[in-house]
Length: 124
Image (cartoon, rainbow, N blue to C red; front, side):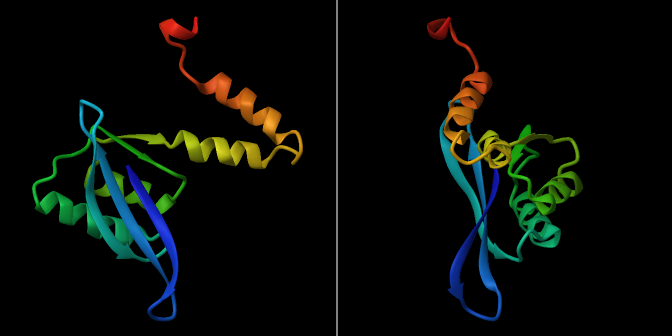
């Protein structure tokens, strides 16, 4: 999972942007893979981080999950071309709900979550 975090700390002229990679093991445990500073939405920053991980022995992920940051997706395609891509449901939901009128957005949010939550044996 690729993620970026913007901090309000200014070390130079630009704000610091942290690139965060979190991996999920087959048993569901999450692990921090990498953390680095980078430029906002920069393909080059993500490519550098992914290539560093690859040089350190990281194999191509089966699936990459991220928000709509185009730099991340371009970097994944460049460094790990066989990796499948999936948009983060949290960010996708937030983008959809941003298009809804303000007061009804809570109702829309509940409906959206119900419609996108996978059904299990306990919810049938």
